[in-house]
Amino acid sequence: MITIEEIGVSLNQNPNLTKELKENFLELIQLFHEKFPGVSLENLNNRLKTLTIENLNRYTSKEVSKYDPITNSLKVNQERLENDVDAKHILMYELLSILTAKDNYTGFNFNHQFEALNVGYTEILTNYLVGNETEEFVHSDEIIATNLISISIGNDILLHAYFNNDYMTLTKSLIEAGIEL
Image 1 (tube, rainbow, N blue to C red):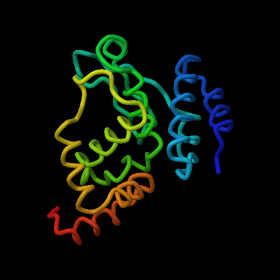
Image 2 (image 1 turned 180 degrees about the horizontal axis):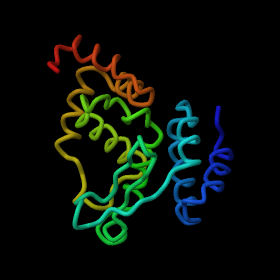
Image 3 (image 1 turned 90 degrees about the vertical axis):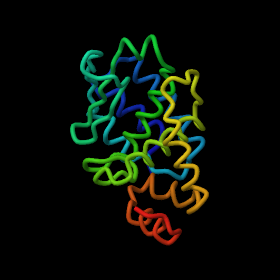
Image 4 (image 1 turned 120 degrees about the vertical axis):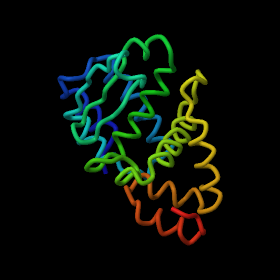
């Protein structure tokens, strides 16, 4: 099992990250690990070693940030991150994406089949872990839908599927609950 100390070493070895970002990531990872001690940090540790940061242009993208699991890059609109949003919330959201990244998807969002559900669940987990100081960037519709699905199939199934990239268990559970895909 990967330790927080090993995560710190991996972060410090990454020349693409600023000292401040490394410290912020480590603080958020410690918080995550306290709340979810049974979730493996191995994938996160491996990805943090080579994670790159790229700028999002405010004229070409309205997003504040976006993690790309294929290139292992976090794209950030620095101006919006500094002025418009809760940076702690955004960084935790993206850390969850990095932690659950597999091949070309994150969480249980295989082939974009569960994109809205993945966004909603990531947002719910982020709010649970660090809250959100701004209301502007809340994915309200996705959160509502995810909560309804959680009631139907159980949060334990969503939690397992999310942290284990197990879209098949999620699919089976949705079908058994009578939820059309």
